[in-house]
Image (cartoon, rainbow, N blue to C red; front, side):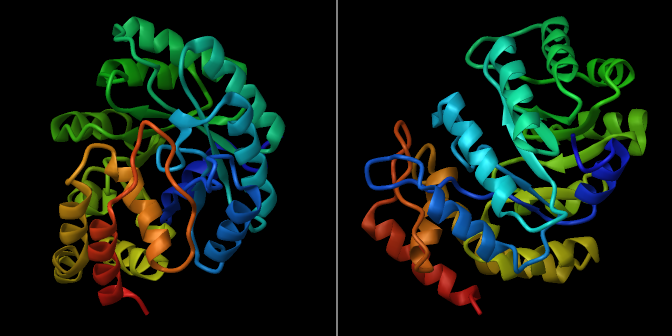
Length: 305
């Protein structure tokens, strides 16, 4: 049984920065639960509003269903009291429903429904997929609008009417017109989460579209900077936001963009740079080169305190 009502989840998650922890691995690519729990405990000293366990930055796509359950249970056990845990569900509908049920049994508070694996789908097919997952659990469900799960406003509106536990919409596409239409149609009946890679880049303009929060990958290794950035966004401090973009975020993106898949790899590299290594990424991702890690380490030193 979730600890929050759906309304409470929308309110709590929408009011603060969302933690997006990496999934720690040993040298032989097994889940390192002890290190993962220690990392969540370290992050708990900072006021995040919720935690995405085994999400995109947490390498959901490389984990087995059993490992997803392990990670979610570790997050539930290690997170501070009162912090909502958002577990992942994805792949085909049957497996997504299975993951949803297991997340509820593990004590998660909400679900992030990631795009289905590989295949394209019609709006009717996507709607049926979401309805099935919502019916499989009492947890609040946040749909991830990204890749082959690109929802129209009409589809989201129908789902919001049909599924009482559809609580949120995470955007990973960046269609400004769609986001404007979505908020104009549904208003605050949904939670809107920024989900484009390195969400800080888009956080200030997205705030005007009803997107009050985002999941921060850099919170893993420069949590104080990430929180300061979020506060500047909330205060609509344009100088503060763009100063931090120029100082760190944009040079960080330059390193991230050197290789496909680095959106995750660079976060684990950041952990290594601050002396809290999280292990390698799993294939098919690749780790940063030594030179790239050195560049990132120097960049992090400029904003660490």
